[in-house]
Image 1 (cartoon, protein in one colour):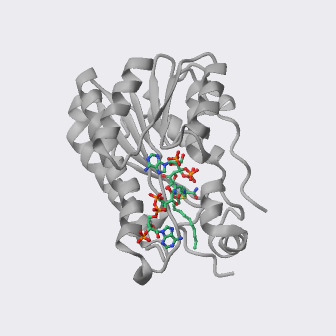
Image 2 (cartoon, rainbow, N blue to C red):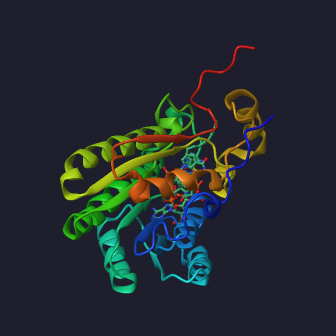
Length: 268
Ligand SMILES: CCCCCCCCC/C=C/C(=O)SCCNC(=O)CCNC(=O)[C@H](O)C(C)(C)COP(=O)(O)OP(=O)(O)OC[C@H]1O[C@@H](n2cnc3c(N)ncnc32)[C@H](O)[C@@H]1OP(=O)(O)O
Ligand SMILES: NC(=O)C1=CN([C@@H]2O[C@H](COP(=O)(O)OP(=O)(O)OC[C@H]3O[C@@H](n4cnc5c(N)ncnc54)[C@H](OP(=O)(O)O)[C@@H]3O)[C@@H](O)[C@H]2O)C=CC1
């Protein structure tokens, strides 16, 4: 038997949990980021989404507005600090005061460590770690100026116990967790909290392109107590919680959403 599905967040949290907040979700047009962006809107927050391609951002922005809140979709390459600063200017001009940052933009491919080119390493570590740092420092300064806010970064379980065939992703995600702990320590005095959510293996188009169905089946059989892959919906409740006043005393924490992937395999 598999672990059950996560219920829709509207069955778990008050509809006005985040009323009056504005969330900025990088990579908010696809996969986990899209699910999070729609959930923030469901719970009353205005939502800005940003990534390189407007093609998938626009329909999500329309779906956000359909929920009765304000939306902003803007392009950004998180690897470029100037671009990130321009993104924040656009978001502040279009939907106002950002109070929640979700560092969700990510990249990965499977490749043996000894075959990884310098540019391959840079493109993934640049997106995951430089991108998270660029957004955290840029938006963080705004959060400090406004007197508080919440940052949630998507880590990954691959940062905890080594990452065969994704050395770049594992190292980058380990850096993300450490960065969240550092800014959590520095910025608590400004009312800013920073936490990491570490998905295990979540069925999104992005990860299935990386992994394929055959490897997915192997992962379920050998690696997952839950006996199923995760879904983007599984990542929603803990992220909403960390963004909300319910987590007022939670900072620098690391929450795996992994169906038990990090547990030792059962011997029988
Ligand atoms: C086991 C259990 C699993 C389990 C798996 C579980 C995973 C959990 C952890 C995390 C999961 C995720 O993040 S899932 C999210 C996945 N989503 C995405 O990746 C979406 C975004 N992806 C991208 O934008 C692209 O795929 C990516 C390559 C990363 C960046 O694109 P860019 O346009 O910036 O870069 P490109 O010019 O295409 O490529 C840059 C360099 O990378 C190299 N490169 C690109 N793909 C390559 C590949 N498959 N193998 C080798 N090298 C590759 C190119 O050759 C270039 O190097 P040179 O030739 O030397 O110039
Ligand atoms: N799915 C999984 O199993 C796991 C996912 N994660 C993490 O969760 C997050 C979401 O993953 P998932 O939904 O599967 O991934 P997706 O591939 O669906 O999404 C990645 C998103 O990041 C955006 N993005 C990629 N590169 C950049 C860039 N340079 N600048 C701005 N935006 C960028 C993409 O948009 P665009 O192409 O428009 O730029 C896309 O919307 C990522 O951080 C990922 O590492 C962690 C562990 C497991």
